[in-house]
Amino acid sequence: MHESTGSGSALWSAQAHMPSVLGRQIVIDRGEGNYVFTTTGQRLFDGTAGLWHANIGHGRAEMAEAAADQMQRLETYHVFGRYLNDRAIELAEKVATLAPVADSKIILNSGGSDSIDVALKLARRYWQVQGRPEKTTILSRDLSYHGLHAYGTSVAGLDFNREGYGTASLVPETARVDTSDIDRVRATVAEIGPERIAAIIAEPILGTGGVIPPAPGYLEGLQQIADEHDILLILDEVITGFGRTGHWFAAQRYGLRPHIVAMAKGISSGYSAVGGIIVAPEVWEPFYRTGAPIYRHGTTYSGHATSAALALKNIEIIEREGLLDRVQHLEGVLTTEFAALAADTRIEETRVAGLLGGIQLRPELSAEQVTDRMVDTGWIARPLRGNVVQISPPFTTTDDELRGIVAAAVSAMDAVAPALESVR
View 1 (cartoon, rainbow, N blue to C red):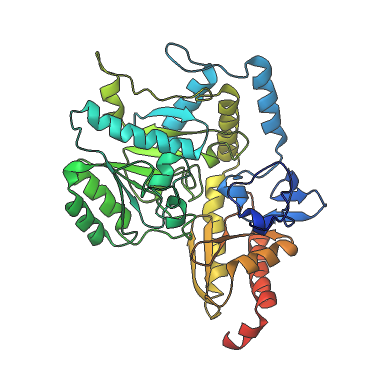
View 2 (tube, rainbow, N blue to C red; view 1 turned 90 degrees about the horizontal axis):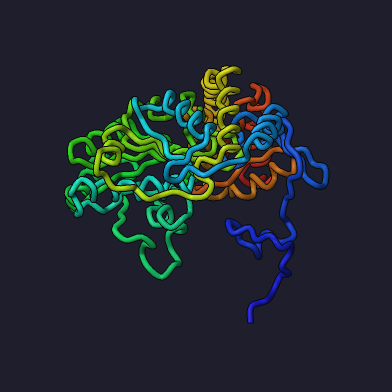
């Protein structure tokens, strides 16, 4: 018999180790700007923008008004068969103007994990329609995270997200490639056989894997491999899309032309559950021809009208307030702050790309303990794989707030590991 620690509330947080968090959970009940507030009254700077989504900050009245206005007009209507709703059309048209590939089509859904499943299913369906049924294998990067639906779990580059389900992969025919060495990627492609590979999926910047920007030439190398071997390049921009790198999409920052882009999070800044995929012309055209088959993917909330209205208002705010330029400025501030930590030998490495920052600590210092201490002092950061402290706040963060959270991380290191002071 295992000892019970008590079950807590009825809400099961399935991305938490429940025995460890029971009695320690932090309940948020309000957000305002770059801050959230707990039920005990503590004010916390949101240094992670929730889960990389609160790009325009919390509690915006105009977002609530946009939701109320849309719900009073039409909460939603499905987009199956001949039916559409006007807000879904408007959002798709807007995203297409921002997309890294011209003349794209947009499939809308309810979030990032949905987007990955839609993208990977489409990759395999595309090759079937093209008369290439042998092209079924999906490649993904080591250390990558692609949500936790069945397909995202199967292509996870983080072993702990893929294991424990009785088979090596919930969805068959997946494989991992090296996350930084493009020559090793080429070797894996040759070993599997490019004629069997449907797609390569990649986060432009590894997020949950430790905030790791791409090695020089790596993403460009993936593009070249895809183009040379008739392999679809799918970018998982669930985190990076809609401004997190200072561009609408990281594909634009790195000069890529993906066949499919998965998106979510920043499209609505978390004000509604919405995501989708951007599909390049060569992929969508076979489904638009006379006599073409149906892709056959959709859910009740695909193209949800109220979610679309909120996404449109969010994009309007990003444009109106110049938040892409703001991210580029904050990238410089964070780079400067991290450079000042270079002499701190408790830190193995710092990494910045846009408003994605990571402080990788030495093994003697626990990122989890550091971030726990930061919360105690009013700053939310997140421990990631590789003993990394994630700092990725809203785009509306001030320079002083950004400097403040870096200083809070250093103070937390001092507090939790005073014995390491001698190695500084």
